[in-house]
Image (cartoon, rainbow, N blue to C red; front, side, top):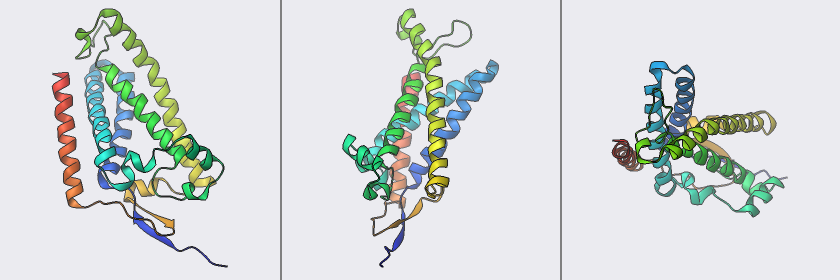
Length: 221
């Protein structure tokens, strides 16, 4: 009987890892600050701006980032999702997001993106007014404010599903998903190409992040 050799490679470049953990912390911060309210609402607003900056960065990084951070590396059609659900070994043991995990990533980016953008137009008629609320009618601002509040539950549900999937892979499939997102490296059967993660790539990420921050600053001011 032959065994397939495993190789440890760089899967997640540093900018992707920083994006992941920064977004997770900011989602928690946004939830806490809006629930506490009061003087913390200004930090809820700032957290929203930071999240919008991160999401813009991730959209660009999905084209210009490391090998497995690019959308082309993990966004697949329905056929790939069905094959994964049937237990196709190729997609189950490939580096990066599996086809089902890719849907989770896209879903989270979409709902968190809507939350960040809609927050720019919210108006509670009491103490908070989004920086762009004056650019739309009162009815539109009211609708977006309502959707902003409802979407919070969608985000919490997707986050819970995300955490449940991590636990399932850890204890059900004996596959650690958190470690690689911390160290960047993981072991896979067979020979897979490593993601680039050198100084020039990181400088590129820094320039992109600065540009995205500038865009958000321009929008809100």
